[in-house]
Amino acid sequence: MRVLTQDGGRVHASTQQRAADHRPYFFLSYAHTPGYGGGTDPDMWVERLFQDLCGHVMAMTDLPAGASAGFMDREIRSGEGWSERLGSVLATCRVFVPLFSPRYFASEMCGKEWHAFEQRAIHHRARSNQSAEAIVPALWVPVPPNQLPGSAERLQFNHRDFGERYVSDGLYGLIKLRLFAQEYERAVYELAKRIVSVADTVQIDTGRPVDYRLAPSA
Image 1 (cartoon, rainbow, N blue to C red):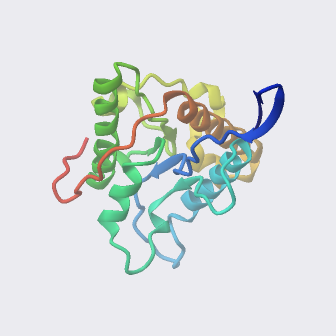
Image 2: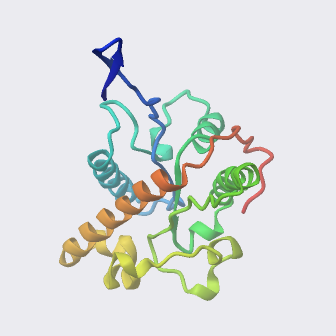
C-alpha cells in the first residue's frame, strides 16, 4: 500500500508492507478408507473436496501464486519424512478441518492430528487470554450426536448453515450423487468462507511440531 509522508513541506511516497503470511489456511484431517474390489481409489472424493476448497480459499484471500491454500497428507512427497511433515504443517496451519465420519473417530492417527492442533489452541489461550477456537468441522458422513467423542461434542458449530441436505447426507452423499450437485457446491463454498473467516478472526499462534510417536489421541 502506498503511504504519503510529509517532510519539510514536501510529500514523499513510501511503501508500507505487512508481513507476508503464506501459511496454509487449513489442514484437512480425514480417515483413509480401505481399498476394495475394482481398483478404484476410495479417497479420490476427499481429494476432490480438498481441491474445491483450495480453489475457493485462493479466490477469497490474497495468497500469492504458489502458496498452499490448504494441506492434506497426499501432498507429502515420496521420500519426505511423513511424521515430520505432518507435525510441521499442524504447527503452522491456521485452521484445522476434521472430516467427520464413523471411521474418523475410530482412527488413532486422526486423533493425534486433532491433539497436535489443539495444543496450539491451549497455549494460545494461556498466552493471550483470548478465544482460540480454530477447529472447523465438516460432515463427510453424518455421525449421530450421541456417538461423538467429547472433543467433538464440545465444538459449538451449526452445520445447518451449510444446508439441510448437507446435514442429512454429508459431503460424501452430496458429491457422489449428481442430483445434489448444487447442494454440494453450496456446502463447500460455505465451508471455505467459514475457514477464511475463522483464520482471519482467531489468528492462532504457531507452535512447535509434535512428535507423532509420542502424541496421544484426542
